[in-house]
View 1 (cartoon, rainbow, N blue to C red):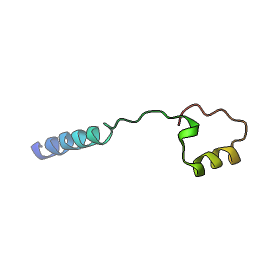
View 2: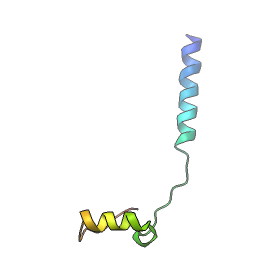
View 3: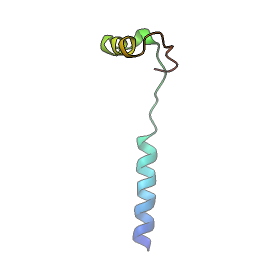
View 4: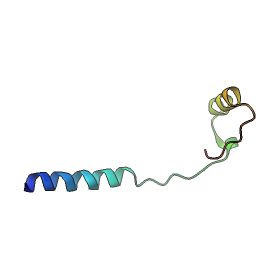
Amino acid sequence: MKRITFLLAGLIIVSAAAFADDDKPITVAQLPASARQFVEKYFPGAKVAFA
C-alpha cells in the first residue's frame, strides 16, 4: 500500500512539473512563415484568437 501511495505521489509531482511552463500568447505576425501560410490557406478570413 505504501508503494502505491509513493508511486501516485511521485506521478503527481512529475506531472505538475511537466505542466509548469511559461507559455505566453503571441501575435499571428510572430508565427513562423509556414504556420502563417497554413492558417491563411485552410482558414481564410478567420480571426485567430490565440497563438
